[in-house]
Length: 261
Image (cartoon, rainbow, N blue to C red):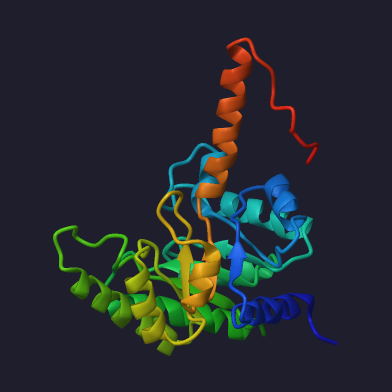
């Protein structure tokens, strides 16, 4: 008999290779996970570390204690039946062990930032996560992240920035990562160049409000996956603040508000 976690991992991996782009509106707590999971067309969930940290009053960047972070992710996994990918940030100093602990609570994929560490160190971190998956008997879907575009010097030639993105991404793919996440990549020609360099359905991106191409256009460029990072929480908080401002100013709450909890 197959193990449920292994089955969900294979399901998540398969979703990355379908002709249709995998769209993951990121979640941060149980109710956001339940609402997104119940949305037609959603086939998997991904957590956002920034959003989970904010929920507990911590800034982003591994400032939230790992135990607390994992506890929230565990609650999300237990509340839904879909595969869940965890934003593991940079691995909290021990990427392999962090991945092992995530797998133990039912997580079947994860993001891992390179933070522009020396390439050898970043590749070793990818290998450690993939090793943890193999040791658990799970095809862990590592979304290996490079910050080469996000942290690039604005004065640097874009050709050299894209070259670094491709070098790092290919190294992560060679180390076993199924897909590579490149935040900071929004221009159509650059997306096409990186997608072609990685191969079909190997590039994943984040949707940035007011800047990113629509999901259907990214699909045509060969992008495997589109996530939303902290932006979905900001969408929710924007609606909250707008509603609060309206009623405080003497108005009413929005008439179309749905009982989603």
